[in-house]
Image 1 (tube, rainbow, N blue to C red):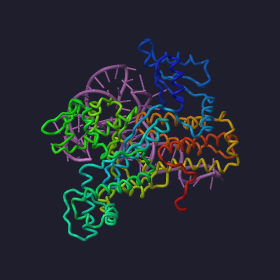
Image 2: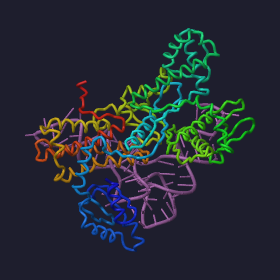
Image 3: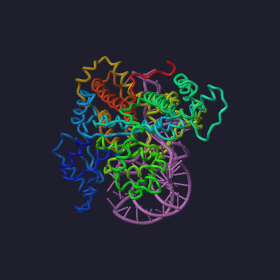
Image 4: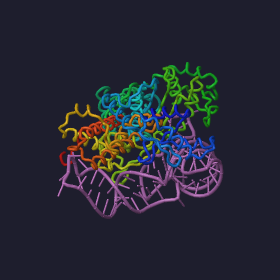
Length: 533
RNA sequence: GCGCUCGUAGCUCAGCUGGAUAGAGCAUCGGUUUGCGGUACCGAAGGUCACAGGUUCGACUCCUGUCGGGCGCACCA
């Protein structure tokens, strides 16, 4: 819709036209401050220019019903004809509403939590953010792949083996054990220790030389837990890449970097400082063991060799210092680091009824993602994370999302959708009759609601292009509000315009449902009262 | 110390590539259709947009500096 208007204006004025949403709907559907920017070169007052431009639209009425100049702004009101035709198209192609066909291959890597324990609440935020971007991109027709990088090499894997063994020795073999400074703890170790006992026998817990074996077996079990809990959040990955599978390519990749890699003090370094990093970094230690960075270098080389048009990484914000290193490596490898975009997901802190959420010892003093899903549900959790800018710290209260009233945004939106459904059922008019009716001849409020519902496509595009998924949740909240208000002001059933109004409601429902599905949330057909549960 | 980032209503946050009187939810106070689900709607109150400069016809938005919070500055991942 906006695109159409923008193209039309660009052709008419022969220049780029900034289109904005007027603060107040009484100003029209779209507005442009173009007269201000033309004022200087034409040496005329913006107000006079705007008036001249406005009057030049007099003969054209197919798209606009009015074009007005107000205080130098040019305000456009779309014609009912234009709106209703678009709405008709959307309702007869509901599966394609707001869809596009972008020809771009994107690789999106997110979560990538170490396979050493269950996901915590911080992981959940990155997971939801990534998956929402993924769904947006899919809807826009991008060829996008969701990938999980499994860090199944390095110290943390050794630590996993050690942690299981210690747990088993203390809790299964009833030995006295001394814990080292760092080790993993949490309920999940119990299940792993028990099945390890069955699979390997108890000897493995006392034989330190076999801890590696134990760890490599256990990380698959941990990944199962991880994948399962992501599935509970409606998040699925297309591909998994194991860090351990990459090191065999190290020599080749290192040579590929040419001067980007050099030897000093018996170690291999990457000359990342020349590419904007604070220092050069070690990639291979003196004893020949590669560092974590080496894995990422090989991994990113592999990503680029697979040949995508664009790459997106979502990392925890505490890794932001790492971006310049990986970008440096990408450039030394001969690729364009502008194609690699790293987005950050910030910390989360939780409250419950105004008090800091207690971490359970059982979980190893972290807030488990699965506990929060159990508490407020996957939909609410997804909605919260999607509705806040991912790169700023977030604090929220669980209690707010358990309420069954308009203070809970997810409830509020679902209620709007359910409300429409209820009224469609209640009416004696059939769906076919509704769809066959015309949306023309409605009043201003109805036209305004129609316009709101038709805004979804540009919201989706904007949300993805800016990587700000909260634009979609904001939109759904305001569309739901518009629906509730309209419903309150205007009686539907029994009205003269009942057929048309029902059709209008179907359109709103389509936008709500489509928008929710992109958030990974299924729109409900009816609300269940709490007391009915 | 250096780098990144944030600082908007009592609280949690929006504010599009600078543009028309700074927005929403919560909390507070007041009100509502003889009511298609009041699980909703309307209104009031509440802000020197951290502070100081600069650019501009116009700055919450861009630039510089100051103050304050978070994160990073590993041969850990």
